[in-house]
Image (tube, rainbow, N blue to C red; front, side, top):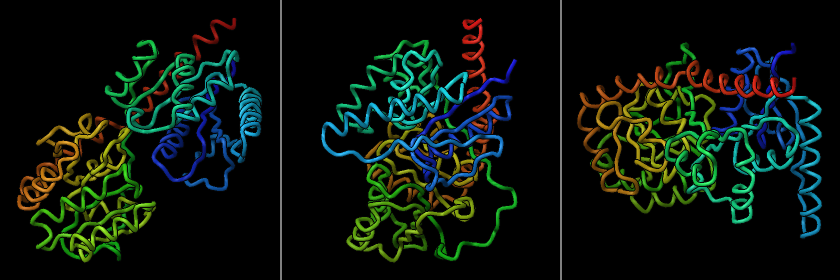
Length: 377
C-alpha cells in the first residue's frame, strides 16, 4: 500500500504566522510517515520560510488580477478549475487548507472529488472582516469540509452555529523551539536599560497604539525603560507620530522585521501583547517559552487560553488602557514578581510542545485517510 499523501494549501509562503505554521506542519507530517505536498495559490517568489526537503513544493499561480464583473466571474471559474486540476494531479488522500478565503476556494474547487478536506481558521472570524460575499460563501462551503480546525474554544463555539460539532477540532499552535546556541550579544538597535517588547505586524489589529498610550501613562516613561517593537506595516508612521505627541519618542524603537526574534526576547524585561483581537498569538507563546514575564489584553481570542493570570503571566481587560498602564507600573517595580512569572511561563513549552500539537494533526489526518481508503475498497 502506498504511503498516505497529504496536500497542504495556502495562498503564499510570505512572512506571517499562518505561513510559518503550515511549513512546520508539513515537515511534521512528513516525519509521521506521510508523503507531503505544499501548494500555494501564488507563485514562489515571496517564499520566506524554509521547507523540509521531504516536502514537495507546488504553485498553482491562480492569483492573477481581473477587472470588471465578467472578467472576475470568468477568472473565478478558471481559478477553481485550475486548483482542482493541480490538486487531483497530485492524487492526495487528504487536503489541508489554511486561511478563510483559501479554504473557501479549496472546498469549492474540490466539490465531488471525494477527497476529505480539512480547513483551518487562523484568526478570529468574529473580528477579522472578509466581506459579505466571502462570509456567505464560507457559510455555504464550510459544512462541506471533513473537519474545520480552529485554535480556541471561543472560535469553536462560533463554528458550531453553522457546522456540526463532530466536524470541529480545536488544535492550538505549537511553541516554536528556538536554537539553543542563540547569540547572546545584545542587538545593536536595542536601547540600554529595561525593555518592554512588542512583536507583530504594524497594523491596527495589533494595538501597538494602546501600548504606547499605556506606557506614556505609566511610571516607566520617567525611568530607564523603553518600548521596542519588532515588525513592519502600515502603522509605522502613525505610531511614530503618536509617540511624538505623547512625548515618548525617545523611548520608542521600531526595529522592523527581525529574522530571529529570540535574540531580542532574551534581553526583554517585559513582553506585552496589545492586540485588539487574535487567533492564537504565536508571539505570546514564544515570549513565555523564553521566560519573559508577559502581559496581554484579554482580547478575543487566545490570551486567556494561554496565560493563567498571576501564575505564568498577567491578563488585563481588553481595551482598558489604564489597566495596562497599572500592570506595567506594577511589574516594572516588582523584580520578584517578574522573575516568578517568567519562570512559570516556561512551562508553555511542555503544554504546547510541537510533539503534542503536531501529533494531534497527524492523528486527525491518519484517521480520515483510513476511513477514505476503507470506503474506496
